[in-house]
Image (tube, rainbow, N blue to C red; front, side, top):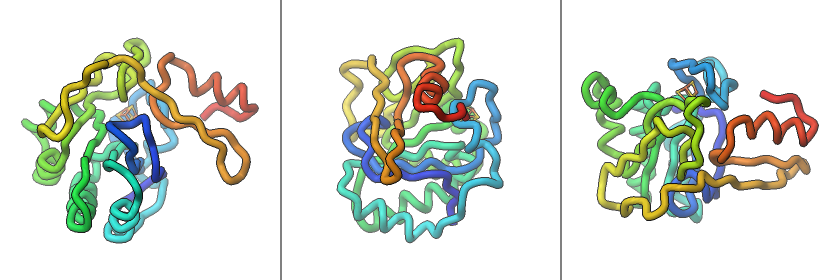
Length: 198
Ligand code: SF4
């Protein structure tokens, strides 16, 4: 089982190409600036069988899989199992976000965390820090780095432009995903939409 918060089957702004995104539930780092605090408690979200989720991902018309959160490396064994199960069905690009630095994961990571690192093409590391907010590709603050862990994807030719994707849900609500180019976007957007900021 893997504990997830949300999924999206066609995201164009969290990694190269169009990607299936899995946001896992639970993060032990509890950063003050976290833009998704509802996904910090490990008790939230829902448990889903790894094989069922892998079948959905492999069957989606996407170029790759991105795992965000929450903290993917807090349940690294389950995420590694998910990637392995996806690739048993279909080869695809893999990317993950982590609040841990890559140096921490390499030096102090457990076996599951090192196994997950070994399955990734791209890693964005470090927590989001509002005072270092920047308009950068796929990440929100300039402490966060994009690590190419394989040669599958070329180095970024243009590192500017975080990218946002807007959609109207089946219920008629407007939603967004991606990384806002300006700090405080979420609160402003949700105020404008007449919702309570999360
Ligand atoms: S590491 Fe990321 S997901 Fe976890 S609390 Fe910090 S900002 Fe939020």
